[in-house]
Length: 172
Image (cartoon, rainbow, N blue to C red; front, side, top):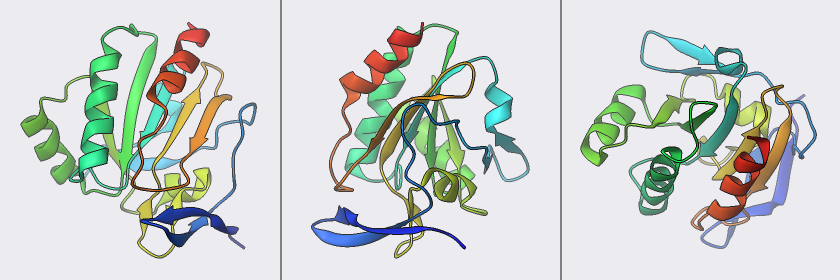
């Protein structure tokens, strides 16, 4: 039975239900499968040995999600080859590719959770009412332990960029 959590997140002040567990720093990072494109999937294992910053956005075609992805793309240049930044949304892979091309995103890897919501359910960010993933940040060390977790209480707010980047730098 899938766990549901209510009363901890909202969209424009209206409560939403998150599906899956609430993860904490120190937990093992759950496995997931998401789409790189329409024909190719990827998983946490494909980034083994790297520090992973996972930026979760509901949809790249919204203002806050756009800004969040652009911010982490610009931060990526200073983090080096030991770090991979993944942006996960429910957007279809070809929509993600189109958006990245138009936005000049070249350092962040966009991945789609649209098929099975594997990531959303494993990380406790799947929004039951909208079938979108809730804005959140996860920093995972080279041994696949969660070093930093931020679940936002309001979907339309920005995450704490500085705290997430500091968590990554602390692992370098």
